[in-house]
Amino acid sequence: MRTIIAAAVLSLAFGGAALASDTITLTAKNGNVAFPHKLHQELKLAKGCKACHETEKGGTIAGMGKDWAHTTCKGCHAEMGKGPTKCGECHKK
Image 1 (spheres, rainbow, N blue to C red):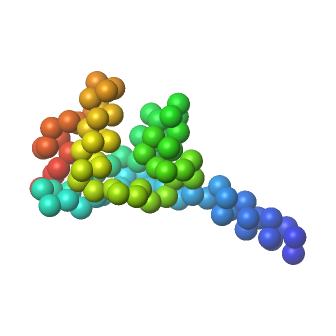
Image 2: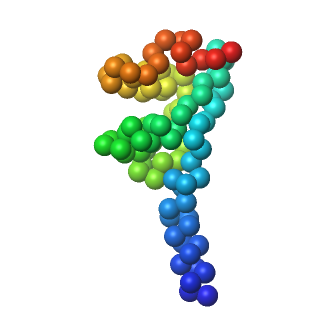
């Protein structure tokens, strides 16, 4: 019984990363945005999940929307000098 409980606790504790989708499609008025989550996880290792999320555990992003994405995503892309920064580079109709 203890083994089952320990396995369940470990699965819940570390399962989030394994369950994270490779690519997340965000629905937007000007066309859907395909967000390559796995690629961003690999690029953000130095900053961790808190580069976008409120905690290192990830999860939903409070305030996520057009203004947040344009500030956070475009800002990071401009700062790093790579990644899309123009409307049609993210939004696909």
